[in-house]
Length: 200
Image 1 (cartoon, one colour):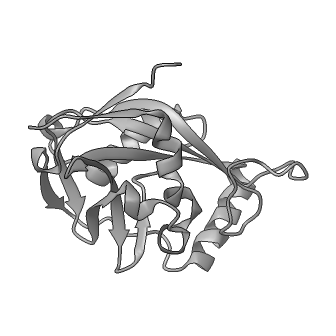
Image 2 (spheres, rainbow, N blue to C red):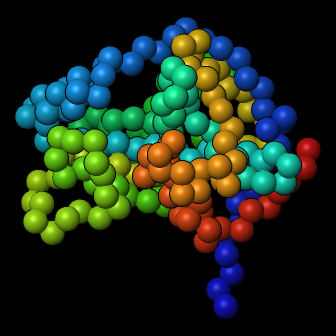
C-alpha cells in the first residue's frame, strides 16, 4: 500500500491575527462580478485563478482558514492571476495582499504545495465543474486550489471588513448549501493526505 503524504498542521493558537485596512470587493453583486468577468474575457481570454487551502488544527481535527465577507459568504484566500503570471508566484502575491501585514518583516512564509483540485467555469454563470464539459471549447475560467503549508508560527493581518474563520473539515463536508461545491468538496480532496497534528 502506498504511503500517504504527510501534512503538518499546527494549533490555531500558534498563529497571531491582526487587522489592516479594508480590502473592498470589486463587485457589489454576483451579476456585477459575472459582467466584469465577461469584459475581462474579451480583453484577456480565459480567467485563471488560484486559491489557497490553509490548514490549522483545533481539538486534533484539521480546520481550513476561510475569509468571510458580510454575514454569510465565505471564500478561500486567493484570486485572479495577471496574464502570463506564474501560478505559484501569483498565489503568493494574492495571499500577501489578503493576509500579510504591510511591513516587509512580517511577511508569512507561504510554502505553496500540491495542486489538489482544478475547477472549470464553462459559461459566464456561477456554476463550476471539476472537469471541463466536452462540448465546451472555450471555458471562461480555470480555478486551481493549492495546499499551502504553514510554518509553526505566523502573523496574519486580516482586512477590517473581512473575518478569518477556522472551519473544521466535518463542517465543510458535503455542506454545498452553506459553502458551495468548491469548498464543500475539499475534505474529499484532502483525504489522500495524512495529517500530523503538531501540538505547540
